[in-house]
Length: 166
Image (cartoon, rainbow, N blue to C red; front, side, top):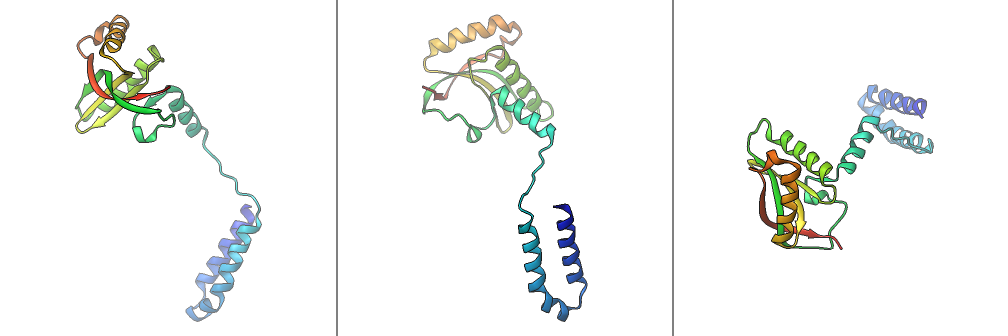
């Protein structure tokens, strides 16, 4: 494959080095031979760096949703409900990293709830759960307080569009 690609590039380079008149005569033949050479190789190999593969696997494993448009597991429907906000900050230097770290922390401690990291300028926010009633959200918030007492001042129940997964 590499040898054929080098041949095709050399053919193209020689066509470019010709005079304009010679190039016009040979351009159709050169393009046809390059296309033929590329198509005749039979297989194309795409190499994915292992670091990219590991990053993708980590993102899937974390199950953190940063953008609703990128979701792979679509809800059956959405409606008004409640989520628990566990982080919000507008510091342009640290908020993004802190929000993602808090999202990973909450997802690791409570994998039964979806974690949503969002940016709505200038605020980064982390919300957890899709609760249909305020009572469900209050019960989960009590669990969050027990697990992370230092977050007590940051925890808030907020009304939001929630995803319903049946």
